[in-house]
Length: 178
Image 1 (tube, rainbow, N blue to C red):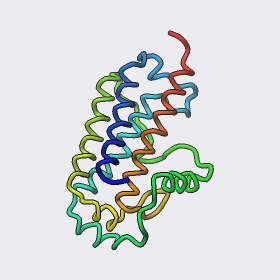
Image 2: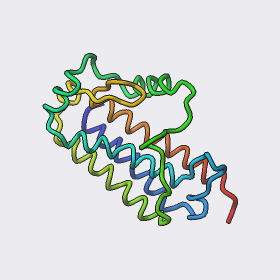
Image 3: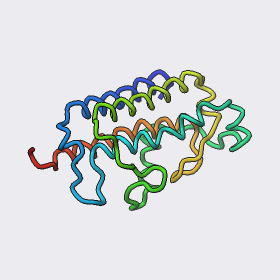
Image 4: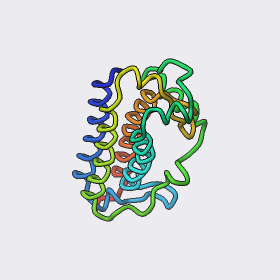
């Protein structure tokens, strides 16, 4: 997927999550079917928390990537291959932990969605500073999948948005009718 298509794909996923957050009744958006199951709002917060470290990295000089992790050791895989690698890396794991586990999200769904959108607009702004070749030459470690090219990390990020959007839809559909 080239950079322009990737930016469009990221924007599409972000806009779907924001529209969903705005359209969902607040009670359903914050509904937790069980204590250890995230609400739709917590999924949005998780997505924001997940992209913030990536934004910090992509804001660094490109030489940082080479100094820290060296050059990419493989060609960038396709979206489908990255998704498959992610599912293989999950290997039955449930949920994120540590810095990626959601805190208590803001009780204002519109504000939460706005924060989420700003985090992803920052990512897209960083992406505009990278050319096609650089996306394939530099690597970033993923917590589960190991070293990914920057392009692969962005493909994963686009999938991650869609994955959690599907979870959000199922959570809101589980909510009692208020």
